[in-house]
Structure formats: structure tokens, C-alpha cells
Length: 255
Image (tube, rainbow, N blue to C red; front, side):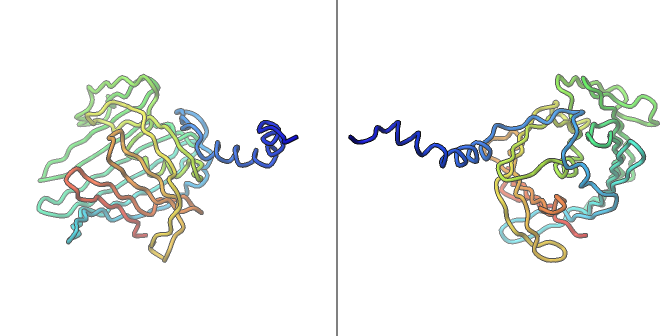
């Protein structure tokens, strides 16, 4: 008598179970990262400075945009990220950003942006709360003092997404949903999905770097932005985003 299909399946089940479990892990549902939760790899954020070059790439040219410096500093229970953007071109400009967070969770507290362009200085300051983002009332010359943006879900600071992603448990098949808000921007706080699409070795400042390839469409179906994070440190080595006109915005680590 020949064994039934169900009997064969049950006999093979112990051998097949690890494969099923692995497939389930690789294709697991996106993990929602709640503001205030401990980030598994927050310890990978180290004090220091790094510089990036931003440029636009086309089929036949590369056009430099700016040098982008990012500084990480810890002050007791607070994390501070400072940025400086030195733009080139017909209208050079300089932008400074200073952001504060709770350590361990990356919960945003304040965000200040100062831009100098064409002899004009613009000051913008924001406070992040669980249900809203508001203008800092006591910051001198704050042009965003009256801002009030409701946030049904607490939001992370979009202008520090590079360091935030570094603190996540990047691995094959990992996928995260994150509420981000670009302070003072037109878009309301929203969930964005970032996923590890695979592995790839790319050139870094000191040679080839084995990276996790992270992708997102920024809620624009059909578009794609790619991030390369070094597997050891999870520092971002490169980012590429295709613009609507076909040009590619590139951010690449200098040092």
C-alpha cells in the first residue's frame, strides 16, 4: 500500500520546518518603530564628525551641490546631532542644523535650522511632542514660532534619518515602518517603509565596504531611494535617489 500524500508530508515536516521558519523570517511583516522604544543598535552611534559630498549625476556629468558635515555628541542623557551644509553654485549658501534627542530611543526633542543665503539669515526652531510639532517660542528671530502641526502618531525627525537608520537592527529581510516629519515642511507626519533589500560591496573612502542595501520609495510608488550601510558599523556610506527628471541625487561619504 502506497503512503498517502499527507503521510509523506508529515514524515518530511521536521526537515522542512527550518526552511518554513526562515522564509517567514525573511518575509516578515514590517516592524513598526514606536517613538520612545529602545533602538537595538543605538550603541553603534559614536561621537565624532563625518563629511559627505552631495552631487547630481546624469548620463554625462556630475554636478557638485554641497559638502555636508554631521557631528554626533552625547551630553548625559541627551544626544545632539549638528549639521553644516556648504552649498556651491551660482548662489552659495550655508545651513546649520542642531537637533537634540533622548539617548537610547532617538526620541526627538528640539530642532533648529539656520540658513544664510544672499545676505539673508533665516532662523527656524521646532519642538517635538508626542502629539504635535510646534515652533520654539523663546528662540530669537524664529520664523516658525507660530507653527503647530498635529501628529496622530509620535514622529521622528526626518532630517536625522541617516543616524536613525544606523541604530536599527539591519539584517537580511528586515523591514521597518517609521513615522517621520521634516520640520517646517509641507508634508504632514507620515509612516514610511524602509527595507533591507540585500547586500552589496561598494567603494568607500578606504576601499571596498560590505554593506546592507536599504531601500524606500518615500511613499511615492515607482520611485526608489537606495542607502548603503556598512555591515560592521552600520554607518551610511552612500545614498542614491532618482529624481522625477531622471537625474540621480547622490550622497557619498568622504571621511
